[in-house]
Image (cartoon, rainbow, N blue to C red):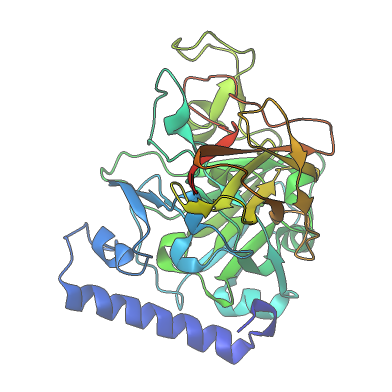
Length: 401
């Protein structure tokens, strides 16, 4: 069922059904105990692909490697999991979202009211954790050791435009940033709430959503059920999950997830150094690509045509071209970059046909260019929190005689 085809009955019934089944499943499973009002990690893991590699449980983080991403639309069970705190168990029937701050009229909507008040839209868009690929940095950077090609996904999203809701509230002069606050509880009562803000230009983008659906179904609980922001192309932390409050501000929000987390040095630092005082908040992802087929150590046949497949994306702008190297970057061949009808924030498929000439171990390498002339580097600049890894992706294969 496509998100754009979800009727009000489907929406209300589907969400209610998903909530009831999830709750029932958790009780039946007898999963690891968590604080009241939260979802155990074991219940979430049971819903995910067996290919998911789990990095931590509290908070829960996990992702699949590149060869499990060989899809134009990321399946829900392969969508990466990244939480800053615990997973709340929210009842959609009582859930509300409030719009406050520098607005002419403070608004508050139930799920049903939000659905009826605005036109529903569907987009496909990239979300990627800022630390995606962190394990590839040397020396090791601080944070979850995401796989070199883990921590991202490109599903479809259904919901309403954040811009439409902000226009309904009426923006006051000086409105410059929009902050989303999530309902995820901490492991201790004193944990800072998850609040991030985005500049008004991004908040008013037609593809920035208050979303209730993923891949044509109500949001899974681990991905923000019943409501989340979707800020495609930007670091995943900007897409606040379990959304309950939207605040319009005159400046960027000052708090843990804006001031000390999800920041990079304003000026590059020597690898291994601490975070300097002058930082900038993470926003759009730099140009990046990965090879999704063949898988590492796949067997190819000398003299037989093979195809490299992959995906390429960039946070803002467009992917201009993708190149493939069979000799560790000494020479590059242009891959075919397929057109996408899925929107400006969807990743794009690329393919490259080649015929291995002789037996032996061969490394396939990919790099992408964006419309601003930026090229994916062999190794990106190091930073203390290990953000924005977009180095060349290498896949080794065995060519048999």
